[in-house]
Image 1 (tube, rainbow, N blue to C red):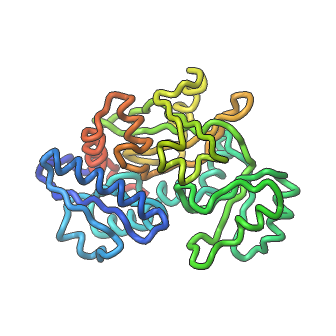
Image 2 (image 1 turned 90 degrees about the vertical axis):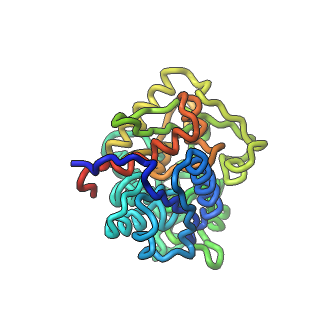
Image 3 (image 1 turned 90 degrees about the horizontal axis):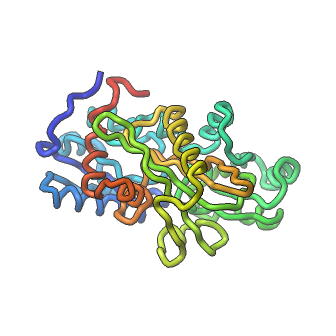
Length: 322
């Protein structure tokens, strides 16, 4: 059973963004772009910064939530659970898929159980010393390695460690740093790629593969936000068997997660054409120059249409979605 699909022209659409996540700037950009597209289409839209908005106020202000939130508190199932409790339909996946997609070690564990290739990894828990973690990395992975927060995105607090000293620095968060748990991965050098999936008229559509080349050490925060630091191809210029394999794996990830509505799956194509799954984004960025919008355009979907399709997916969830 699904929620009855209303005419979105009759709805008060709340575009939720901002919040207190380290990824706040990207979320604001997503929210502003999506809100502008909906307003220009003549739809009743309110841009809502969740940093200063009580959740209890949403019930009387909006009929549906378009989630433009990123990172902690937005992608990890917390806002999804709150909206479920309030009875407000929202875009994107439910609580379980959001939480699993956000917590990379849990997500990667599911991938390995399904025989999907992902870089080998070691966890660094807050209660385990940095030196013990370094010893574990040295024995199981070797160097270089890639370090990133277990529950974070945007390449924030991430980097390459070529030796124990560099790893020690990356595993020592700065004062006020919200990330406490880190994941250290086997370093796979290659071409970053991503695949978007969007539900349209009851059918899950797989978008063209997007690939990126950068001269920076890796596809970091600066490269992601400064077009001068990267070269993009969409559709990808990689061989067709490689791109078709990524699209297939992206659909597998969608099924494994139990994702809904929209999803972006990130890959790395390394030496000998090894293609590994890096992570899944249950709330991909919505800016007009972002990866999802770029892939949609390559697939013949204009940005305003993309955003309206995403809004409609709030009403196609099953009656109960974990």
